Length: 390
Image 1 (cartoon, helix red, strand yellow):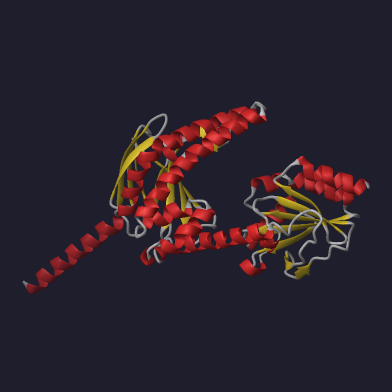
Image 2 (image 1 turned 90 degrees about the vertical axis):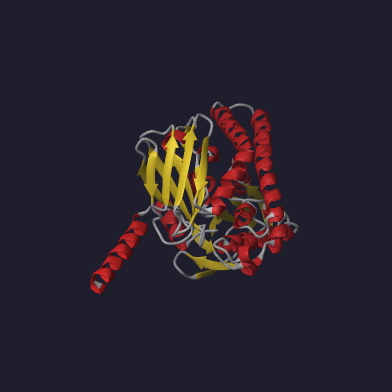
């Protein structure tokens, strides 16, 4: 009798264990999508700069199950294909109001019921406090998200049809106002909930000066939560931002360019020497930066045209060595390529007050800055032409 009882207990325990392991992290039931492709983007909270882990799953009559691909906390964005808009250049646009955003832990068992319509994906979450609070808050600023996307698509149409810059700028300001409304709501939540993990996520979505102001007030439990690395990375970015502002007064046309040394693609430390050529071009870029990449063909053309008189030094920022090297090889960049992954005190982009990418500087053989160009535009190439023809 005793043996049979022990055996029964083991069977019950094993059955319970198997039941738990077979249950998915996420169960979705979304009306309005039917049989559809579902895109899943998983971002590591431990290293948000890494490329997302991308999955594609499929719903049957709006129902689908999902398991985390790895055993650590993720920010997961789930978007039905039917949620997508398409820009006029045929590229997809996936708005937040038609996606599901979740903080997913390895042991979570979350169920979502919702409905997709033309403008939004409404849903309810069960099984996770942070996600339940997120969707409760999202519903309060959902209309701002919808209006922002409408304007985004209108701007896309205007750009595609070469509309006036004034009209586009006017709409861009309006779009930014809706974005500010969302941030304002989230900031109010942060101020009143400094001990909640959701405040950590919201704070990382705020402008850097706002993050710097409220970071210190977060409860220690929030600072040590799964958001720890993300918060610390953003706080370092805030400190970098303040240093850049301090450096701006020194990085102006007519002033001396700071000296620096960085690791090159061949693994050696390269020390800049502005006296080598008539002019040195510093190109601050990143493999993740679409405008930077789009400028490579024109840069290569100018390099071939003027390489006897100019030296181009590409300085990759906020990058990994692997992505940096792959991008250089893919685009066959022949000039000197360096990677700027130094700590704050030695960060060359900070010394040069680089706020956005790409940023290009032209420096003469005496080390004097003769041109500063933010963004990818024809003004840089026109200045280079003028200088070389002198």
